[in-house]
Length: 217
Image (tube, rainbow, N blue to C red; front, top):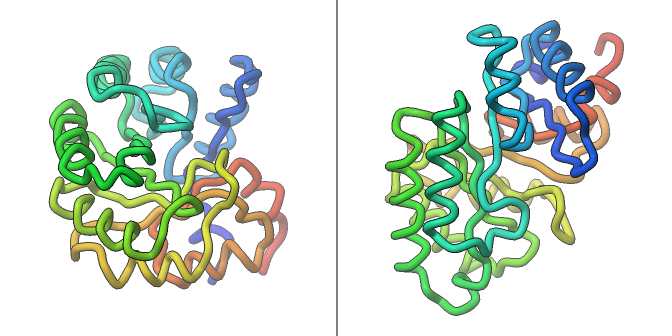
């Protein structure tokens, strides 16, 4: 495994609330220079970034982020706006309260509406594994598969925990064939990047990949 392969799977991320546009430009230029999978940036910066970098850069943004408890109508509107602004990929957070209430039909209905609003864009569903039981994770794997999302994603990076290899194994064993996995949150060492890639993650969300993956290995 080499650095270039791992970087090609990284969503280079800057979602801090105080990020200014110079931070976003730096992120975008680093992603282009290192052939990274995408940049993941706040919705308010999507249109500006896409106008500057156009097809040279895959732009990902977030919906219902980071807590997930916006109403369905708000999430669908956010998604439509992001697509209109030029977003290529949407990472949306499920409503954890709905999981705890066992309102799984409500979660599925919401995700189907967001899937429709995404049109042909990539849709990633953040399930925030740190708050879920094993049974809840398995049920969400089924739902994410049924709504034809492109990815299931472990975490926002703003919860009480991030990605774990045990969760990646659980997700891999329960998602459909066409659903890929994105790990995010707490991946901070070269060894962890390698472990998550080797565990079957097609994407890794990180704000520190370039710092961590310096040099050859």
